[in-house]
Image (tube, rainbow, N blue to C red; front, top):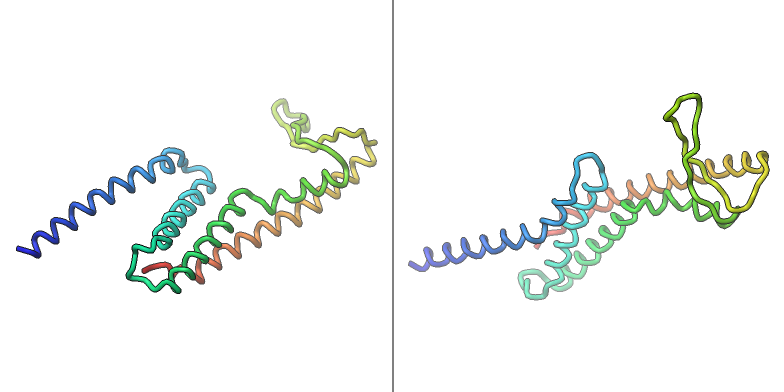
Length: 172
């Protein structure tokens, strides 16, 4: 009789957990699209945030506090790294450097080539530069962009290596 009651109680609890999960995940799934890797990262961020919340709950007493703190810190670090990668923090650093060196700017689309609907995105500056100066600036911009892009790729490698290194410990 007691076993039946415990199984039924567990069954009911699982239904409520499932409903709660549907409620939590609904906004993430609603925004999800299949064509962009950013949504994949959104899913991972949400999952890690939920895991962090679960491990942060001291009511989950079947885990040592020292281990709990370690897991919390590692998951928080993973979320932070994932958000930096998602926001392309490092790959857009070059824009700030260009602004610091050459002044306020913005990206604009200019006609490109002989095609009617072909455009290229170029940086336009508030300050007027000669064509020679602009050529040097665009060359410097490309160099800075490539460095920033390499930093972004390195951040992605670090993120996934960090997760690979730690994921086996993220359980109770």
